[in-house]
Length: 287
Ligand SMILES: C[S@@+](CC[C@H](N)C(=O)[O-])C[C@H]1O[C@@H](n2cnc3c(N)ncnc32)[C@H](O)[C@@H]1O
Image 1 (cartoon, rainbow, N blue to C red):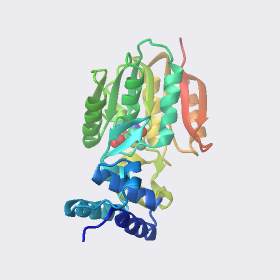
Image 2: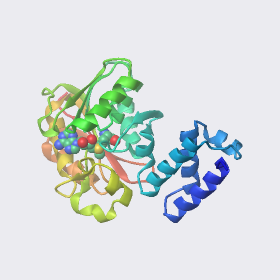
Image 3: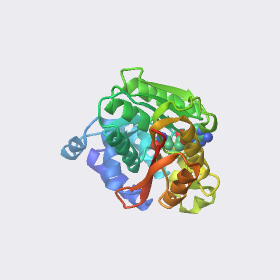
Image 4: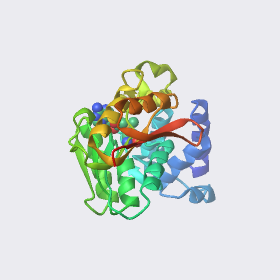
């Protein structure tokens, strides 16, 4: 007898709950919506819908992936950021909601329609830089990452979401970024910033599935943050702005690093919605 949607939802939610997966009922509904091509309401309104054998098999396979801890974003191959869907895969960090703070700060700092040249350092799937280019069609930017596989995803997202050539993607290490001195109006970055010995505090599914090169950084998690500060000191024009995401405990270290470079002013840290210090900015002096 064919499996009905309601029976799959009940069974999957039960198994996901037993495995300790967050929001198991919602998770089962999202998997069913994905396979059946229904929206969430459609799932709720059609409890007696009979699943075909291929649909039941596809649902069993996806449920097994979620039961193994694989994040939904990798199962679906996409994640929403700033209201748009970005492709992701296990070579890219899954965009986090708190990173939207950095985007909001950048947009607020340059509210007008004048052209801005920006660089997104450690772009991953491209969510920060592509969002800036979409929100401000006159801006042009460089998206840099030292991971070939992540950069392929950023290029695919740029092609799919942007209908202009306003951003260029380039393979580069941030310590040797191909950016001319004094060339950028804005430099944004969400670099790896977790301490390498903090494994025990990182969620198991993050540790097992997300790329470690996107997460961890030497020197108590600060090495890549310091690299971006040095890069910004060199490649921002006078009056240009650096915006840097960091861990909740790293605000003071980043502010100090910017002060020690002696070229930044207006150094300030903003908190995310959870009240944690999350994003530090500084303006290059000498205007
Ligand atoms: C925390 S992820 C951020 C990804 C994306 N910007 C976001 O906010 O979701 C950090 C990114 O920096 C890249 N990365 C790490 N070390 C780098 C380096 N030395 N030079 C350039 N990119 C680097 C990683 O490959 C990864 O894509």
